Length: 197
View 1 (cartoon, rainbow, N blue to C red):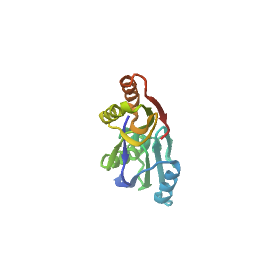
View 2 (view 1 turned 90 degrees about the horizontal axis):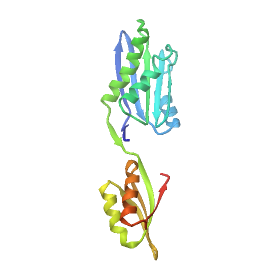
View 3 (view 1 turned 180 degrees about the vertical axis):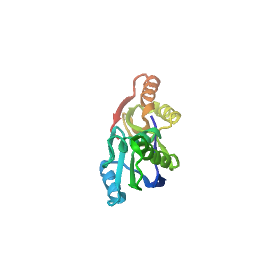
View 4 (view 1 turned 135 degrees about the horizontal axis):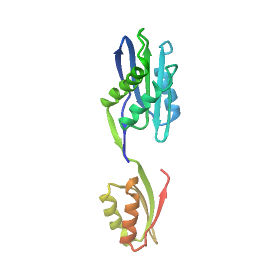
């Protein structure tokens, strides 16, 4: 499963019924990154600073005084709907005197982030898996051919009297297929161990 990752911080401003909504999205890798992002961009004298973030399975959102479910959840839904991961999103609202109602608030908060992410620069992130492989010399070229066919790379190779030890990196979704193919090609002579990346 690949997902989109922002390549830079972006912002978008919209006037909606005299309220100014400023949406800011930034790539993050940790909750600490989110804290730094919020501290840098929140405007303390704004009416509301509503936010959400997603980092893999971890997510949080906050309505900052808006009616429950009208700000943070729609912001998170916009992140997920656009297919992004590793993203912090903040919407700063300067109230203009006209109430939007709960539906209007949800559309405003989610919409400004959805439109910002729609025009954001991104890269596709493919989760990687590292494997350690012990192999007799005779099968070295087969390993490299299989690795190349699935878009993997060799990180290091060490040789000993018993054969070679290679550390390889490949798309996580292809690791089982690669292991099966290498075991078949070497008639079980390959020793394959997953490594924590």
